Image (cartoon, rainbow, N blue to C red):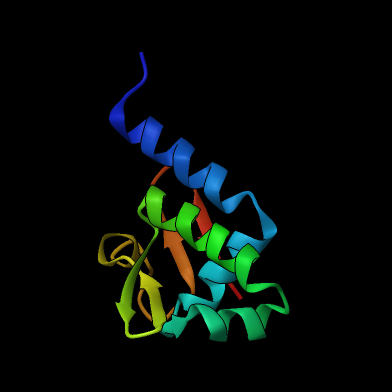
Length: 100
């Protein structure tokens, strides 16, 4: 029997299984950034970053807020609550992620 937590964990694991999405979350662990800022930091196209941001938003890892022409991205509060204090580490109980 699959539980709600298993489904959630599976979705998060799939989302973070992509290197670009991993890097986006890593950049957002301590900062709120626009898609343009993420594009520059990652050295990727805006289309590519926007696509990965959408996937991360749909899974519930990050949230976006439109301010004029810019879209600001940050880690969702629920996701951030799983962050260990003063560390770039997320603990889901079933697994733990460490970001640089």
